[in-house]
Image (cartoon, one colour):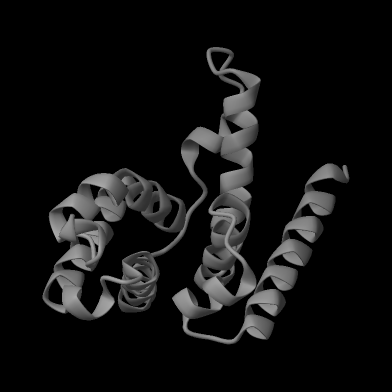
Length: 166
C-alpha cells in the first residue's frame, strides 16, 4: 500500500541492485576485490544520505564508485608501476576459448585508457546509459562525455592498428 508511494527501502534496494553495482564496479576497477571495496564504500556513503538520494540512488552510488576508483588511482599513482600481465604475454594457452581470449584482449586495451575515459565507455556501451546520465555520474557535461568517449575510441583504434601491423 504505502510502500509503493515512498522511496525504496535501503536494504531492499541493495538486495535488488547489489549484483549490478558489483558488475559495474568490476568493469571500472578491473579487480574483484577492489570492486567489492568500491561498492561497499559507496553503500556506506549512501546510507546516511538515503532520504535525499532515494529517488535516484543508482546515479549517486555509481558516481561514488567511479570517484573511489579515481581517488585510489591518484593516491597510488606514484607508488605503482604498471607492467604487462604475464598471462597476456604468454596468451597461447590452448585451454581457453577464443571468446574468452578476445574478451580479455578487449579489457586489456580498455585498461590502458585513462580512468574517466574507461568509465565513460563502460557506462555507455556496457550499462547503455545516455550522455546526460553519464555526465551526472562523472560530474561533467554531456559534451565532455562525448569528448571522452570519442578520445577513448580513437585511442583504441590507434592501438588496434599498431597491434595489427607487423
